[in-house]
Length: 153
Image 1 (cartoon, rainbow, N blue to C red):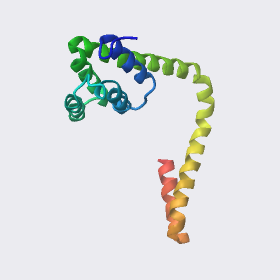
Image 2 (spheres, rainbow, N blue to C red; image 1 turned 135 degrees about the vertical axis):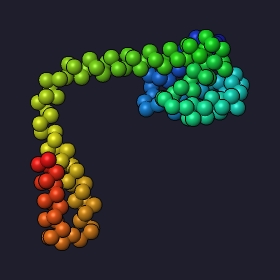
Image 3 (cartoon, one colour; image 1 turned 90 degrees about the vertical axis):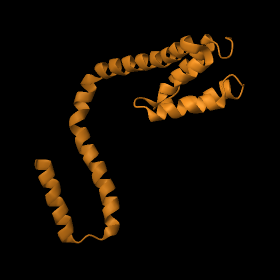
């Protein structure tokens, strides 16, 4: 096993967390707290600072990970942390792109009917919302006219 807070540790912890998280950097927070803050390797104030700074800057919220790497091991730590985030992202994007390309024929067969399925789901949800409103037949006719005009357009 690598030394806690070392470059290998930073790389492995962030790489494994990247592989198992979806939707941004929030999944990293409890792992980093357990691995580096609770053990005293990273000052909670520095962690809070870099996390808060990432929320003030534009871009992905996982940007704080490079800051954590920097506070643990300097510039090499920041580079290793950023690399550990980028590798799974690139591999995942390549996998999704390949899968989408290989499923193109299936998607083209499903696409025409999927519009009707989505319209049905939206209509069911809308009806569930509208039914308690006790709409009159005139209101329902008006809604139907608007729906037809939107569909025609």
